[in-house]
Image (cartoon, rainbow, N blue to C red):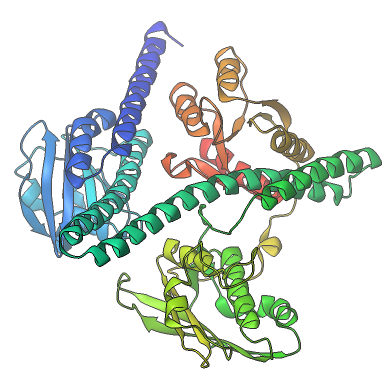
Length: 565
């Protein structure tokens, strides 16, 4: 390699590192943004430099129009103008929720050429902003034809993801500010309404605090489940030896005892963790748990299931949906101490008020129990509320959180003496459901090879994961913090793949991944997370949630290595 070529490559790497640094600064600024104006100002200040574009524009969706509200560009574009969403590239990106990459604006039918030919724009990338439904977009433009690099697209998508999070946070704070304004007005008018409003604020704060608490508890609990599941899997492999059985059983027992202590400290149940939504065949799911439901209900409760065979698949996390149905069924059983009937049915319906337009499946779980009073029904989905003895809960707050995260909702129809019907609304999946259980779909085990650097601050998780990787055939080096891993690589150690935890003291897994992408782009990356921070990772980095089994880890590593091939 010539000195000139080496110098050019070094300059490119430095430029890429500088862009990721700018992007990191932008994400930090977006984390503190609380309004659409603040989000727009951050994008206008950072996006063009981060991507290396000749211009950027920020667009808001206003009904059937796309409003170009801001730009940072080498020459004027369309700031302040509005265009029909059906004839606008940003409108296409927001409607479809997809990134648009156009190497030549004159060779893409989505481009309104009349609006573009008066500008310098010849190629572009448009990224939607918004998780469940895009309400904004950010576009980057270049004055020359050509396809933007993967890094340029990844940088813009990372900024859009951070803007989506900021937009959702802004809506939450705006709702809270609106509530406080209402409280101030009522203070001047009616003392009784003031007391009610203060109760609402306290409950909101309590729910927020509980969400944060249970989120961190979920992270710790998943860390404990990982060595338990991994140890049991390794004990059951044909290659087990008495020594390995003792070692893995000891790790699993140690983690199980720690988990028992953790569970004893929990007073109630709440949920806040990433989901893995897929297309779920509801009749198959309920059929698979019908025996469990029947045994849980007992002989005094008759179980009736009526699910049409042609029911469309729903977008859901299968494991969490099973848990939600089971929790609701247990509530119904407890409401029928003298016996009764539990019915599960479902049908396809249009969106109810308050949900995004589209088709939904409504799952109705009916019982013939003693029903709820209006006061109980009003409070039934609050995580601190229960009508049961200490240590028990209705479980409806978990179902409420689950449906909300999936873009659905939950409704309760009940009256004293007339039974209760809990209705779960879930969006129809766009992709068909996969046949078979997850275990049946796992790829057959095969030996792997190569150098692998494992980074995790939890000793039990690191030990069990290391054993899984070694059993797959990898040459594993493990360390307990990201700074040490980065120092080893900078000093000359070259793994084929880095597998890192996300939540660690000091440098997080996402921060380590960004540094490696800048300085060592040839190294494959896999990030594992038990709870938080996953949404801040660049979208093209493979992620795996705890707890996981060896087959899941092997498949994720294969996907990560395929990206670098």
